[in-house]
Length: 546
View: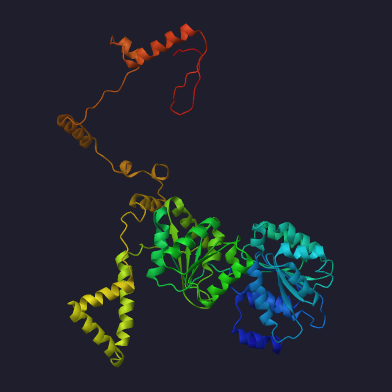
């Protein structure tokens, strides 16, 4: 459905057209009409499907520009997401004069927000903690609120904001509309909806058969853990990525990887919760403008990133929660563009890949790490293509030819050698090949067996057991070993009792038990003796008796 075909007012349609939106996404098509009817909504849709517009457009239309009191509240898990959502809602209300939108979040001086609130604001978009601060100061009053939106509700729960969310919702005594949007629907979310939403709340689910983005090519690299940084650098160079997003599980790893990639010559910065608001704004502005090529972030910090032309996502660490994988790769492959998702896997993390494939109903392809020589050849090829484009304009090359000819004659160099040297300067030093870059073949094969349902001795017979040996062949092999002197077939050891009855000399076992009996009688006390049984547990005996 196109926006022009809807019943939205002309001012809003003009703003939507200016933003470049033409057709509604599935979540927008389902949620906007229901919200305009005044009903409560529970919306489930994955990241990057247009949830902000799904609640932002009805929110703007429900505001009364003549009433300067607070009428709409949007709660977000992070300040980045709050800023992003406020900016988009403000763009929807661009031609609706009198509707003011204000983001409120921690990290910004509160007196600036108080001053803006006193001037009259109809919509606030903020984090639960800062909204509660304003409620305690009485700078935000909920007596005229018409609509409340919980955006990324599952993430707010994961961050421990459930109590804050419920406190805010309890303070709204007037009749209002509540909309909750989330990528997942765990039980705590359903509990909140049952408590704070009306009985006729409409559940809207826009979940595809594949939870991941179809336009994203998903691959993984099975490597040794110590070479993750090297592989990341190779992927950035080989694919010539101009705007990429790398995810790490910890803040410490974000800082370390950002510093190391800078040393390798990449334009990289880290983004996580320990940065000040000014630092985060600077980093995000650089990334949006294109001056920053590589952004390294944690899952929580990345919730506020909304850039349409991210070429690739690199999972430096596999997310601890599989749902985060969907959020991560949802940052690329947007607006009808194709994207890439690379995941670095080491050791037993291969089982997480299988779990992601099973739950997300998708397929991840294993790829080989780009070789150092291939990266150099690729760089040289691009430089030569640029040079070939200049060959058409021979006039601009005359001066350069004279310089090369003069330098060649004076130094006695071949022109081909000079060209090779110049090409080497442009491509940089060639990387050394690392022989043990990837995980051993045995471990990879083990992962493949796990995938096919063969689990060694427990899940199925091993190769040794599956290979049947005929009795005659076995006897032949034993005789052959005897003759070669490489092995002897030992007789089955007999118990000490049987050895005595047979009139044989005492073996090592009988001597061992005799010594223990003598020692036990001398001490005349009960002493626990540990003797391994077939089941592997300990058995205690009183004294030493067989």
